[in-house]
Amino acid sequence: MTELSRLPGPVMDLWEWQYQGSCRDVDDTLFFHPEGERGAARRRRAEAAKAICHGCPVMMECREASLRVREPYGVWGGLSEDERTAALAAMPASTTTRRVG
Image (cartoon, rainbow, N blue to C red; front, side):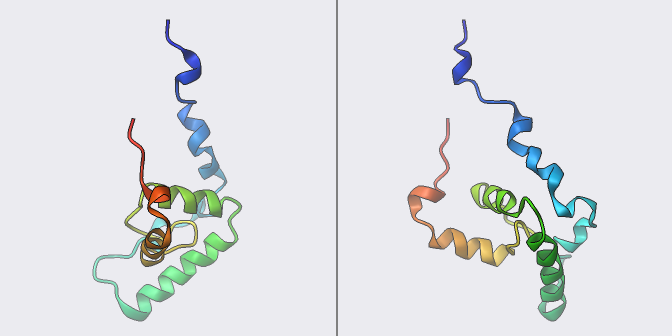
């Protein structure tokens, strides 16, 4: 018989926090830059997205999830793509290595 205590919990338990996100009712194009967007337009869009994040009750859960999976695109948990890259580079290797199996 399978040892139930070793099985992962329900997936819903891992992601249920997303239902509380302030971004749920916002157009997702605010969080992801269109191809070719540069300069001031890109900064303004990202700052508007971050403003929504900073009032979000699950901002830290979102941020941690995006760092854990190394999310390459968009604003997540109040961090832009470049800010996540910098945060990951500043972390000790033992905290950024994903375990397999």
